[in-house]
Length: 237
Image (cartoon, rainbow, N blue to C red; front, side):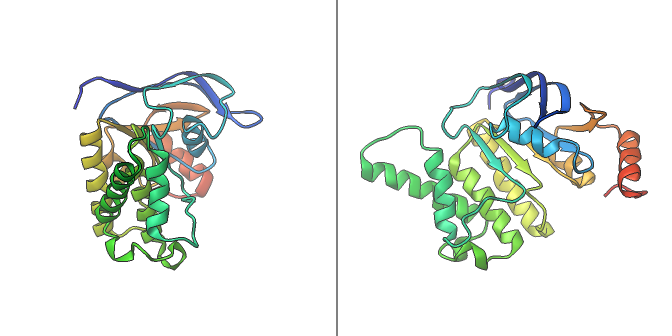
C-alpha cells in the first residue's frame, strides 16, 4: 500500500440544500485511512457523504477526489438503494458495471465482471442467496448485498452510511474483514457515518463530529451534551 497517497481533499466546503448546514470543512484523506463521523441525526453527516458522492451540490468550496470519474467513489446509503424485485446477483452486478473503466473483447469483459460479482457475494456470505430476490432477504442481508455491490464496483473511496446496522456481531466481522482486505488490495480509503461510538472508534483511524455547523475532532463531552440536549440520553452507545 502506498503511504500518504492523497485520495480526497476538501477545502473550505459549505454543504446543505437551500441554506448552509455545515461550514468551512477542510479534510484530507489518504490511502488506507478510515474516517468515522458521529453525532446526532439531522446535523449534516449524511449530507456530507452525499455531497462527496456528487449527489448534492456544495454551496461553496471544493472537493478533489483522486479517483476515476467512473466508479471511483462507492456509496452505501442508509436506505441502500437496492432493486428489490431483482436478484442478489443483479444488484451486485450493477456495482460491477458502474465500476468498469475499460472495455476489452466482450467475452473476456463479461468473465471479469462476473468474477467480481461472484467474489463480492461470496465475501459477504451470501452465495446461497445469489439468485434470491432482494425483497425476500432480511434487513441485515440486504445491507450485505449493498456492501457487496460497492466492493464489486472497486472504488478508490468508499462512503458508508450506517452500513453495519441490523447486522449481528458475526456478520459485522464478516463485512469488516472483507472491506479491510479490499482496502489493502485496492489502496483505497473510507468514510463512515456510524451512530455507535464504540464501534466507530474501533473501526476508524480518526473520529470526527459535527458541532455548531463545524466538522471537528471527536470530543466525548461535547457530543454527550449534544445527545442529551437532543434525545435526553445520559450514556453514549
